[in-house]
Amino acid sequence: MTATRSIRGMNDLLPLESGKWQAIESIVSAALERYGYQEIRFPVMEKTDLFTRSIGEVTDIVEKEMYSFNDRNDESLSLRPEGTAGCVRACVQNSLLNAGPLRLWYSGPMFRYERPQKGRMRQFHQFGVECFGMAGPDIDAEVIAMTAAIWRDFGISDSLRLEINSLGTSESRKAHKLALVEYFRANLDQLDEDSLRRLETNPLRILDTKNPDMQVLVEAAPSLPDFMDEESSQHFAALCALLDQMKIAYRVNHRLVRGLDYYSKTVFEWVTDALGAQGTVCGGGRYDGLVPQLGGPVTPALGFGLGIERLVLLVQEVNPQVLNQKTLDLYLIAAKKEVSAALELAENIRSSEPRLTLMVNCGGGSFKSQFKKADRSGAKVALVLGEDEAEQGKITLKYLRENRDQETLAVPEALNRLRSL
Ligand code: ATP
Ligand code: MG
Image 1 (cartoon, rainbow, N blue to C red):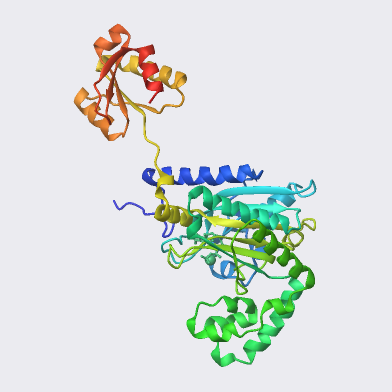
Image 2: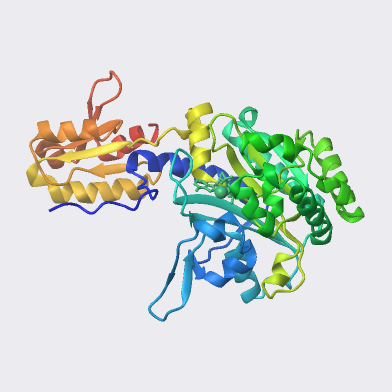
């Protein structure tokens, strides 16, 4: 029989890797909690319409990356390609937005039909942060400072650089868009196929092109700052001043537009050179118009998504010590007759020494084969409960990773010794 394989681009996280992920996840969530952010959980699947309405019909995600299907009731559902839409939906539906500012985080799988490669999968994982009810720029600065603090916690600050931009309001973008369409229409012969298509649908995205032949054209295109409204300009200047004061280095990149429709004013990305083409580890921005667009009250908002796969790759590359795996402390082996005594002893050790990790040899075997398993488990110490030990209320400690004589001790004494492991 042939075994069924997983879906391309959707990977298993095996035990050897999961410890690294746990280390990463606990460092990130601890940082978020330190800033007063609270966790929210919402489904991995939503009605398709939620995503098309928020992300935008003519974005890469909605045009070609969503996993959408009809359920048995013929309703179109989609696996979430990002978290903001579902988070906003949950906040609106549960009336969370009327009670003052909210700072939320979540983490979990996202799904996009993309070409799988290093740092790009079809099921990937993000930490997301969303803030509601704060017009900024102070909260914009706090969110960026918090991401900078996360990089410090991982010791990877030197490998990431911050790019920021302002997209202005939807009105200033409309004016910019008109000017762009006019400019690109006048230069139709220089547009590639992708850009020709975008000219009619989402001309702003042409600025994002990676086609080297179009760089000169794009450089000379009308630039958004010339169309920016006064309030957005002031917001951006104030954000820059706050970042300066906090000594957070950044580069203003007027071509940073990001791939979703809902952004306004501040957008930012943290980029690395250490991961090849998949260099954006974290990206986000302000989306003041989205909440009312999804049927909620007028609410200023901003957020970001942080790709966990890319963060794991980067930390592994730059500062792998952070990912040190936890090792097992104790492996308990027992004579055949002492199996029930061993299980009981193990329970007692676990409740009196909750800090220690203890695995019991299950499935029997000679002492020789049990010692082999103890060694393979990575445990620091093998605890041996032979018939003699059991009779005398003792236990033997055999040190597996250091050159130290084994000792047979009364159980309370042994516990004292283990406490200092
Ligand atoms: P990219 O330009 O690399 O496609 P994006 O702009 O589509 O990224 P966002 O929608 O901003 O990405 O998502 C936030 C973060 O999630 C990204 O910065 C990245 O770290 C991660 N991410 C996005 N798509 C994937 C993917 N297919 N596989 C792994 N991580 C991803
Ligand atoms: Mg993408």
